[in-house]
Image: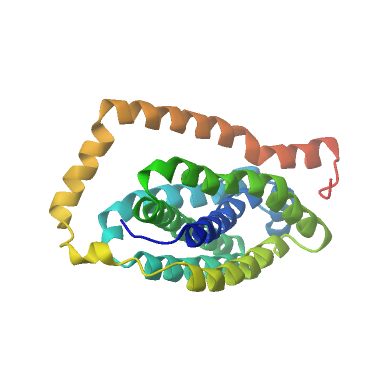
Length: 251
């Protein structure tokens, strides 16, 4: 367990929450931009759904695979490196000139976003005492609400008044600012490296046991069904309102 002051702890938590905010906004912003993206690239709703799901699949798999190597690196360095790659992936989305390029950029954004989510939770587990860890996790999870309340509407307005790429430019700018904040606020977190990390042949069986525990499976199944039910509907709300009911994208 690392020891930092209460004031530093609060700054770190809000920095991690802002980092998570950009990850969640990056995931959510594609959905209301559906009409503009489909029109720009001349793609079908099924192709647009592929772009949305590419992020989700890559994020989920990369976050899971992070369990095999995340303890082999200084948390601070890993956070800053992957977050820089996350910013680059959004720059790639903004500059994509074709749908295949956009799809590749979304997949790469998902890979980096999934790893970042794992690193953020690992930092919370390392730095925050167990008595305050629930409150700390709650603070970071406010990023989801902030992304829905502030991030997505701002992104939609930018997309409606400028272009579909404008929200991704905004994400790049925010990510750069938060990256510099992280470079100042996140302390070196490498004490765990003094212990010999377990070999891959031990990590994988441990991961299998984690995923095969019945209680864990019930929790995973509940989360899976909730997310599947969300994602069967939410990505198509904006296209339905725009194409079927003539609602302007700015609204």
